[in-house]
Amino acid sequence: MDTLPDRDNELEDNFPELLSGGGYSITSPKDVTYNCIGWAADDKRWWWPDPLYQNYWPAEVPRVPTPEAFIMAYELIGYGVCQNSDFEEEYEKIAIYVKKSTGEVTHASRQLDCSSWTSKCGVHHDISHELNGLNSEAYSSPGIFMKRLKS
Image 1: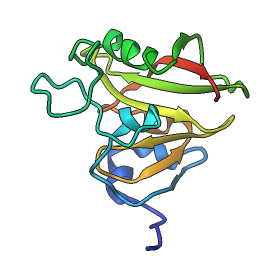
Image 2 (image 1 turned 90 degrees about the vertical axis):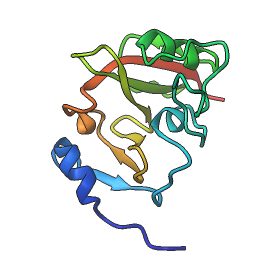
Image 3 (image 1 turned 60 degrees about the horizontal axis):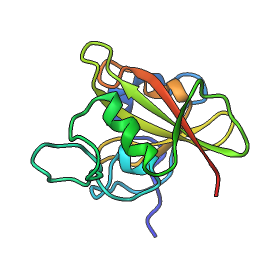
């Protein structure tokens, strides 16, 4: 198995907050077969509500990048909206990032423990990071939190 790099300069350029606080760790090789939305759902498919049906999206959910559609998609796999990102041992939590200027969903992260989250940034590596490490103009910041009981 190839050794993972310690840094990803392109990610750092796009998400300078990754370098503050606890930093980040690369946890997998680059992979183009899945994205952050699928990764947050613990599914290695590329989830996106594209109108041309090129990506996986639950059939029961409108194919629009609105917070409501993403909430519906995650509800289908057992998540429910919750009030905050506080770590709760018995729950898995996700954070959905919503761009303030457009109201569209841009990213999702999954909580690992009381201080770290995991994300897949486009075709880049999976990383572990602090919740606000991906705050940026591109992603904005976490706007919705959801949780489900751990299995």
